[in-house]
Length: 235
Image 1: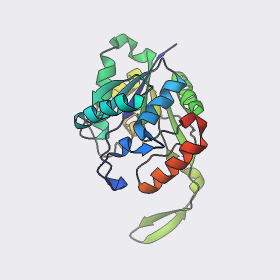
Image 2: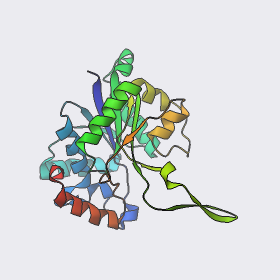
Image 3: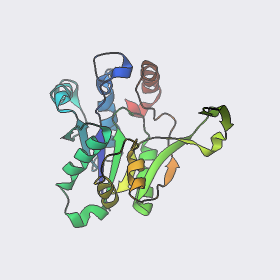
């Protein structure tokens, strides 16, 4: 079986949440969002190796939360970077220390947003299985709203069936992801799939779960609190 690693990126400053507390630390039903996210992966597979990427200035506070609340997921911590790209690169550098270069191709590495605590175990498993087979796996959900494309000439409707919303975890064979993140940073790198695709790889899509929201606004937080009471596995 291929070794499984999970990089959880939690570098948000919480600006869109409207408060001083970074969004990953906001409590949902008594437990910080980030702790819920970590524990989802621990429940799915306790043998997978989680690497939490946090800004240095947040690490002491996080350790205090883990001690006071009792985090159920053992994990490693790597330093956050200037951008998400650099944070993922730091997480990969941490993983590389535990692997011989010849083992890169026998590892699967997931990258997941720290503020997505409601990804289902079924989606995580299907992504890892697809990545083991194809080398890449990205969960998506169909767009349900009507879409219009704007330009200087106005706007026009587009066929929404051709579009999907991208989620995480995005999972890749280790050698592909490590090689991709050796590229120079580009502002167009909005997620890991865009980085790996720029390195010449094909991105394979798989169905995500609609509850797997990214908590970035006060409305998202209200939705998260409702989901936490409705989904037993999120407790």
